[in-house]
Structures are given as structure tokens and as C-alpha cells.
Length: 203
Length: 226
Image (cartoon, rainbow over all chains, first blue to last red; front, side, top):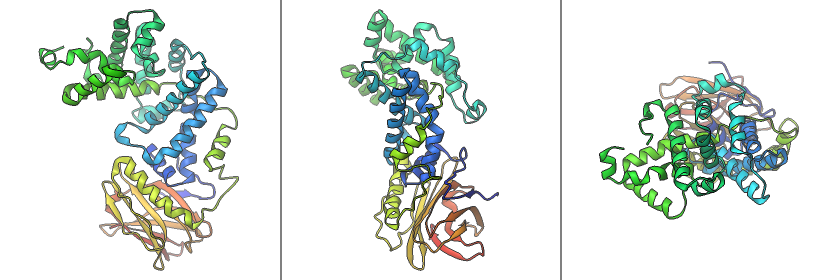
């Protein structure tokens, strides 16, 4: 087994080899190396989500900074039973972005633009993402083939936290239609991510 | 929808499950849906699957390089300013709460490590639970640091030294139950202080002792994990 040389002063961690959970645990015990690595691993995703939602680099930086600070402060209470680290970190970011938009009464990015930017995404290392079983590419592909109205509905709900009622009002459609679009879109995404579940559940 | 599902009333909640998974169901509808899910394993399973997918939708946003200086400003706020510019020695008084934080972190990670107060400098007995083990590094009868190792698919080992006699490059080794010594890695201790985390290539629960060893082979500090 090759020795792992890590210099405390330089605080280099073998990034990529440690799991998100391990880095989070390191952050929780005050390991600067873990905090630095965690930030470097996630900052593009956190800033990317904030920027995609707000469309404003300044607001996105505020949101991304605050999200990282919260992750750092709350690392000791992260509960893996409730989801992945990525999901936790990005949900924090999403909620902060929603708050920032409301506070500023700003117009959020159109869900079509959000979806379009996601579909154009060029990950730094998609091969690595695939190796890790990253479902993002699969979901992106599934989003791309959803009917536009369903894609808008699921993005408005999942990303912008809009309720079915809010979506029905914003889109000018009956509440039942909004609910159906949300449900159908999510079930189709599930069918893409988990093929064994099939589309037979779509009702 | 099967007859079976209709009989159990699942049909009434099919829209709500998706909205519940997306976190956008509110008020009475949310309460009723949650109540149904609690008593219906089929819908609970459905909700779990939908929630996983819903979480992924938030993650599809493209990665974007933050503005210049983002990282520096963030590290300043976190108090971990770029370590290459401003190395900071953590005083001995810092590592004891850090050890407690480690226990809290492990607990929060769902691995069930029991929180134990740290009456330094007396060594703390090793704590085992689930796939996490942790113990004090002891040097000349005094606790001088803490080691923790976590399991999972990619095991890791984290350690911290404070007020140790370790100087310069030292080795971290672990001895497993079969008596085999495993070299985990090499790091640099600055005036007795070192904080370090690395991948582990053995099952953490097999570890009996962890040692900090000088290049000449002298054991500087030992932690008993077994």
C-alpha cells in the first residue's frame, strides 16, 4: 500500500479518495484540511445552483457563502439516514436562494432557463460522476425528454419550492392539472433513474 | 392502480405523494398524507423512491466557477483562512472539544458513537459503536490527541495530536486483530501538533491499536481501540 503523504501545514487531503461523509466528519472535528477540501469539492455545485436560480452573480455569491457556512456549522448534526451529503448541501443552498429571491422580491430564473442550463451542463469529470453512480446525468437526460409543461412543473416545485396551487396560478392552469403534471413528471424521472420501478406506476 | 391499492385508500394520495416528496405539500393535505404514509408501507416505499428522485432534481444545476476570491472570503469567515498563507497552531485546549465534536459528528453520521466527556489529560476509553471507533492517543500516560476511524464503503481515519513530543515527519500505523501492522500514512507534526485525515484500507473494527511512530521506529503515542 503506498504511503499517503499529507503535510499538515499544507493541509492537503487526497481529494477524491475520501467520501463526502468523511470530509464532513473531518470538518466537524475542526480539521482544516477537511474543510478546505469540502469547500473545494462543493463550491462549484453550490454556486452553480445559486446562480442558476437567481441569475445574479452577486446574489449567488451571498447565497453560496451562507450555504457553505451553514454546512460547516451544522456538519456535526448531518444525518445520513435522511439523504446524501450532496442532497443536504444543495437543499440548504436552494432554500437560501429561495429566501434571497423573496427578500429581494427578485424574479427567479425562468424554469425553462434553469432546465436548459442544466441540460447544457458540462461536468468537470462526468466519467468520475458516472463511476460514482451519480444520477445527475440520468436525471438531466430524463428532464430533456419530458414534455415542456411537465418539466416546468417539476422544476418549479423541486427547485423553486412552488406548491401546486402556486404553479396553477403562475401557469394559468387548473389546480388538478398542475398536480397531474408534477406527479407525472416525477414518476417519469423515477422511471429513468430506477428502471426497475417502470413507468407502469404512471397513473 | 390496483384494486388492492384502492381498498387501502392509496388512490386518494397519489398526487400528494409526489408533492410530499418535493416538499411542497402544505397544511392539512400534508398532515393527512403523512398520516396515511405512516400506516401504509406501500406508499411509504413509494414516497422514499420519489423523494430520492426529487432530491436529484435540485442537483442537476450546472457547476459554475465562483467569482475570484470566493474561496478566500469563505475561508476567512470560517476561520480556516488559506492554510498556505496563515498556518495556525491549535492550542491543546482546542483538541478536547474537537474530540467531543468528533463524537458528535460520528453520532450524527448515524454511526451511533457515544458522546463521552473528555477529562483531559486522562485518557478516554475507546468507544465502539457501529462502524466507528475512536480513542485517545496516549503518550507517557497522558492523553495527547484523538484518533477516530469510520467504516462504510470508503473507510477513513482521522487523528489529531496536541502537545505531543512528535516532531517533523511521523508515521501513522494501525495494528489489526490478526497482529498485522498496516502503514496508514505519513504526516508532519509541527511542534507536537498535527491534524490529519486519510483513507483507510482496513476494516476499522479490526483495528486494535493506532500508533504514531517516528521514522526510526520509536513509538511516540498509542491509542488502544480494541
